[in-house]
Length: 296
Image (tube, rainbow, N blue to C red; front, side):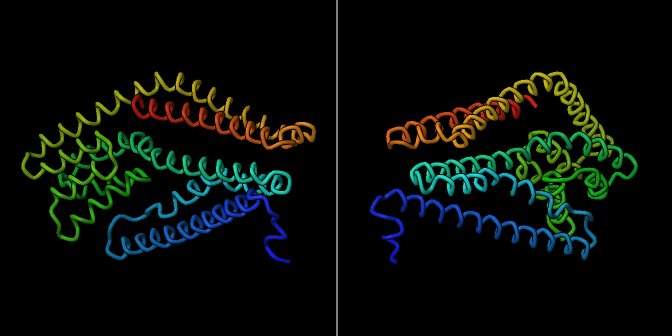
């Protein structure tokens, strides 16, 4: 029996088969990328210990988060398989929307690193100021302060310190801090550290104290606006959950499912409505994330 006999003359089974192949290939690429990133982070961790650099790097920290970002695609595949015999067109739409949502969540995860940097930068600058008062050596104080944080901020500090330890220019290494993460406060910190050799320890300590004070004031501002932001975020999440529940009810109820699958026009109407709901949901989520980045 040939493939044409299995799939028939309609083009939609071929569309579904192609979409399923793309989704499967994307999943394989995701798993391969996770393995390569895990091996690379582990290699960096061993190399840092071997050369006496900062210990305790969170090498595998971001793997599970990235994998969870692809959950919509993994959920859409069995839903598409459930619809494949009755409506290959809707099956292909589910896979396409699942892939789109997974890519968006992956992008959101990458942007979430800035929020993590903002939350931990105040702690690191305070620790840096305290360590610098005890021993006014920038590299040693920064190494001590980096142990109090994790994630992208720690990785950026480690890269800068590696550039110093291997004999590179301290100015260039510290100037790369702000560029690596994209935080304005971290860029200011890099500027202070870059010019530390040209200034007295007292001036450097005052500059670090000033940055720490502004970060603390910013933290108090965050506490005042976080409640209203959380309420808005929960409202968006509730609407997203309600829309997802409506889709599940339509697919799980035979009468509703047969109504929307009964003709190609109704299938197109359901696909347009699903895409519109998903697009509106992603739009409001993106606006909320942008507002959170500006305020918090």
